[in-house]
Length: 389
Image 1 (cartoon, one colour):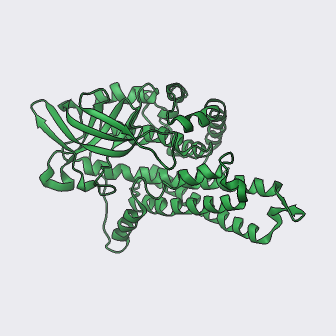
Image 2 (cartoon, rainbow, N blue to C red):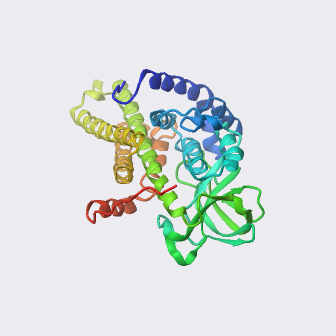
């Protein structure tokens, strides 16, 4: 137990969540990895157990717990070896639902946040576009106000839960002449006419549904605007820090899982009359990997603590994602090597881990973009401030 950050209550939650995953999720993972469809019943079970409401207000069915419960939720999801399943859960709970909670009207919270916490409605967040990638300000999707409606046209891509979600949280330009400062956030029901989605075939994260989504003259009520018009970019940037920290935590957790698996394997695998964990070259490689995992983990925990204390952690979260995802890719690559030929076999966890991990330095802002954000803060002394609500 790392008592600096986790209490006995945290650890009890970890144990019960591990048991839940083992009993309710693990038996279905292989099927979901093959079909690319996570069955609906599991969302409802997560909702019943309160797992989608850990940090959300009690008023809407949440538990109002601290962020270290979220850390445990993320870490344990990485250790069942399906990055896709984990992504579907946290993209719903922390990407789509965060916007509902922070920018949604009372009516939206009642009709969408509440059933999302209960696992009855699934959400997706639609920001990235086919021509924009990490350049959020270059967004082309538009929302034009006509009377008491907005008409939305454009497209989004790489959207987790983009096929099977019930609602979409969508960023669109309301004042295109203002560039990045003319963006707003909207809520859309899946069955609104003009929305179409195409499933994408991916290297990893195969259990989750990732989509390209098109909006063709989609009409939504003006009440579906979330927060203030033209403030969307600020909201997105504010939540990006949290998304990047999530991906940093995911990275240290999957690297730790890979390393634990490799160490156990090495203790059983015999070569030249002894177990391979007795060979100095391999031992020293493990020592280095364990040190890197621990450094990232400790840094990530400290950022969570700062977030709880109200610090705006854009720089630290960007650093976390940049270094933790790079570390995870390297550690998993080396752990696969430690398994020899078995590392390359699908019945062992490393092949899938390697594929799933590779999204880390890409999703939620590429490593290249993060280096530039960090450079602006470190070299140019740029300060990012939270959006005023």
